[in-house]
Image 1: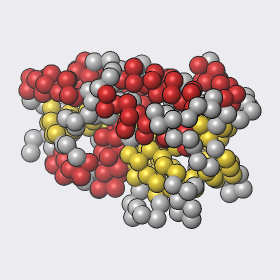
Image 2: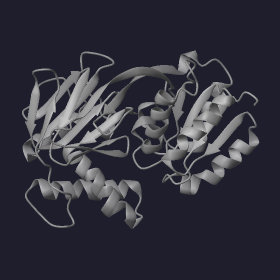
Image 3: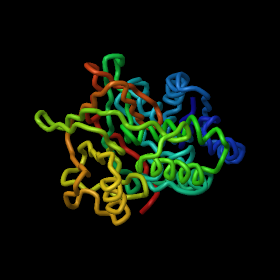
Image 4: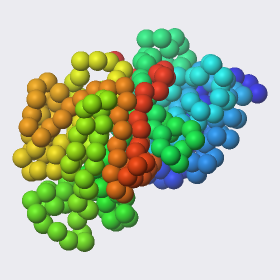
Length: 322
C-alpha cells in the first residue's frame, strides 16, 4: 500500500460524529494522502490498526470520544502492529468529554483540527510532538493491560454512569447534560435521595504507595497522566511522568474546597482538609462492587480483586496548542 501522511481512525457512533462525519469524509475525499478507516465497535480496532500499519502513516489521528481513544491506545501498545516504529498520535475534539483532546490543545471544530493536523503532517513534526506517560490498568480478569490517560472512580464514576444511563439518552447538549449532573451531585451531597440522583459512593481502599492507604467514601477519585483535568484545571505535582491521584472525600466541605482550588488552579499546591493529591508509580483500588472508568470504558474492582494502575511507557502525541 502507498504511504499515507495521515491515517484517520473514526468511530461513526461517537457523539460528535453523528453530525460531523459527513464533513470529515468530504475533507478526506479532497486529500488523498489521508487514509480513513471507520469502525463501529471496539473489537474492530485491532483489525483497523493492523490495516493502518500497512500504509505507514506519519500521524495516527483518532476521531471519536475518549472511549475510542482508549481502545486505540490499548491496541497500539499491546497489538504490536507497528513493531517499534509507533506513529505519533493525535485526537480530534469529539465525543462527550474529550479530556485527551483538550490536554493536547484540540478544541472546537473537528474538521478545522484535522485541517491543522494535515498542515502539520505536511512539514516537520518535531516542534509539535509531546511525550505522554500512559496508565496501564490490570486486574484478575485482564491478561493484557488496558491503556489510557484518565481514570475516574468512586463518586466520579457513579456520576459518569448516571450521565450515561439517565441523562445522555435525553438527547440534550453536552453542556446542559453536565450541568444537570453537577446539580444532581450537589443535591445528593447535601443529603437528598431519590431514583433521579446518582448512587452514593461506596467505601473503597486506595493504596498509593506500599504503606500509604486512603480509606473511605470519596466524592471524586481521579488518576491521570494528563496535564489538565476537569474544568480545564491543572493538577500540580513535583514529579513529571508519574501517576497523579486526586481523591476528594464525600463531604460538602471537602468537595467545595476541591472545587475552589480547581477553579483557582491551586490543586496540589497546598494541603487541604479532605482533598488528597498524591503521585506514585503504582496505585491500587479495591472495594465491593466499585466501578472505575478508564477513558470511557468501565472496569470493576472487588474485595480481593483490586484494580492495579501502573505507568506504561510514553507515547508521542501531536499537540495543536503552542
